[in-house]
Image 1 (cartoon, rainbow, N blue to C red):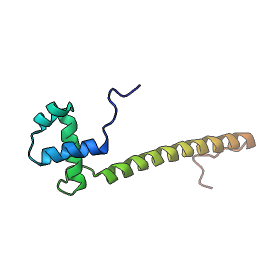
Image 2 (cartoon, rainbow, N blue to C red; image 1 turned 180 degrees about the horizontal axis):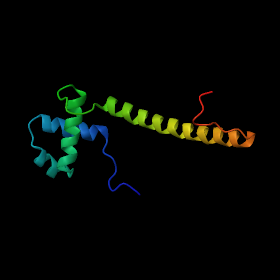
Image 3 (cartoon, one colour; image 1 turned 90 degrees about the horizontal axis):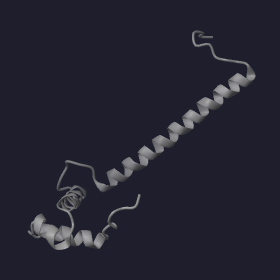
Length: 104
């Protein structure tokens, strides 16, 4: 599904953030540049998180790490499932099955 709007350039985002930090209201910047108020608020919040001015969310680097780790966990789970199925298949081929109640 295509995105409804193309992503904004980093330069454009920075210009909007600078305008808000200089005292312009989010509403007036929103109306002038045709960007939603929530989008502008999100950009300002992320810059403040990254700059250490806020602590009520994740920094950009923390978000990137979280995404990377979630992908890694997904791959590891898939690999584990494949190995479990392969072990079960090989055990069935050899005619050996582990007894769950045996401790030998």
